[in-house]
Amino acid sequence: MTWDPNVPAVFGKPNVAPTSVFMERVAAVMASGWLTNNGPRVRELEELISEFLNVKHVVMVTNATIGLQIALRALVSAGEVIMPSFTFAATAQAATWCGYTPRFVDIDPVSQQLDINKIEAAITPQTRAILPVHMWGEACDVRAIQDIANKHGLKVIYDAAHAFGSTYGDIPVGGFGDAEVFSFHATKCFNTLEGGAVTTNCDETAERLRQIRAFGMTPCGVDAIGTNGKMSELHAAHGLSLLPELPAIIRWNNHILDVIEASFSGIDGLRIVPTRYRGRTNGQYAILQLTRHAEQRDALIESLNGRGIHCRPYFAPPCHLHTGCKDAGHLPHTEFAAASTIAIPSGMQLSEARAKAMCDVIVREFHALTSAYMTVADVLQRKSA
Ligand code: T4K
Image 1 (cartoon, rainbow, N blue to C red):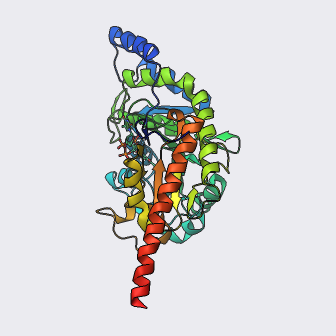
Image 2: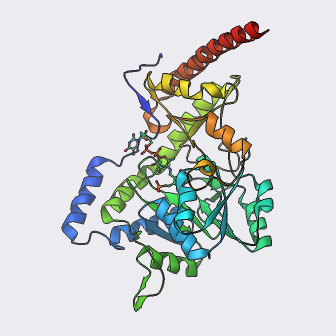
Image 3: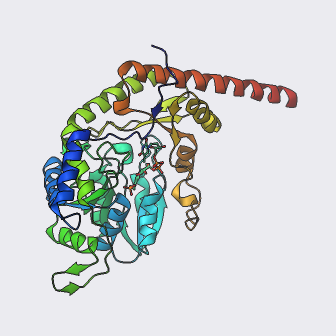
């Protein structure tokens, strides 16, 4: 099959719950007279997710950004938090919003995850926590990270925004470190339109998370600085209606990722970032990297967008180059990843044949752009010779 640009594919296209199932729940919520603040659907979803992730406590929140803030507030006192710079702005902003200082560490160029060999050199007397990201759904090296944290007396909070349904070996992401934070934004394979969850196996942490989620209130008063991180019943209703579909979504995502990986295997200058070597993942992300000719990344995105393949650069610029964070110096692997990475369409919107046809277009456009570039470069070289 050839690619039809009139039937576009979109990075981030939401998975939506079956409309009739969702609308039935919406009607029940509206008739119930209980719309938010730890309502029955939020509690039901917390229970189902707790079972799914095999973790003791699940605290639903309005989004992962607020979830990260709540987890940091619950676990960390003022100081520095070690994290990757190659991540969504939310990871760093959650820490700065709470008054903590991000200490950015470079990534491993293969996995695009926080380089565990560089963590210890970044630890100072002010360091309080490590905030690694299960990048693109691949679980971090949780054992190595926990060893470093134990040795230095640090908390570990995982940004698990991408990793709902992923595993480390056979163990689901959700119970590692002191807490893990998931995003249930519309673009995630499982979503509550906007939403997220903080998970932990610690009773005391869970109690604190719940308290901070609702203004720091206890039955007797207010004894913590809290926020409003409560999820509404309508958001939970979407989650409840989509959750039964998740196993099929994960299966198909992974099948399409197989097709995409096979299509780029052996193509010089392009690779798919590996995401399935420490365990299983939700298969949601197909992340393409230009290992050569990264200067053509934006031109490639523009050309693909014009052909109905809607892609995005991530995460550019990386966090250490954001306003207010420009003190981390040079992080070479992070900067190269930010300049060379493209999130391409994947998952439920693609059939096998469409996935293959899409990849063929990407390879063809890459070759067209880079051979043109080589010609110009050759001309310039010849002129200067
Ligand atoms: N930590 C990490 C590592 C994260 O990646 C994220 C978020 C967070 C923390 C914070 O999670 P939340 O606070 O959001 O729960 C998107 C998502 O908004 C964001 O959730 C996600 N990560 C990030 C990787 O991607 P944008 O600004 O690129 O999203 P947006 O809304 O422009 O959507 C991207 C594409 O998705 C669009 O170009 C088209 C498609 N799309 C999007 C929406 C919302 C649709 O087709 N339909 C839609 O309704 O950040």
